[in-house]
Length: 83
Image (cartoon, rainbow, N blue to C red; front, side, top):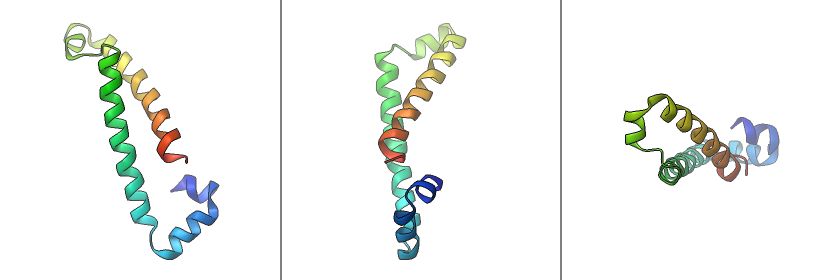
């Protein structure tokens, strides 16, 4: 909401005055979460971040998952949130 309020003022005002702001934000949240979950799973598999790695070396698994989470968050922001 903050992004559209600050960067897409007319769009924000139109959503707000038409009563569609909450449904729009809910839809964007749903899309973002679905994309995030799908990308996390796909990229973790591709990069070999597995449950075996988690069991064998938790610190490496945590580091790699944190890096992956950051990269996926940037992708989701660019493709869903900041459009």
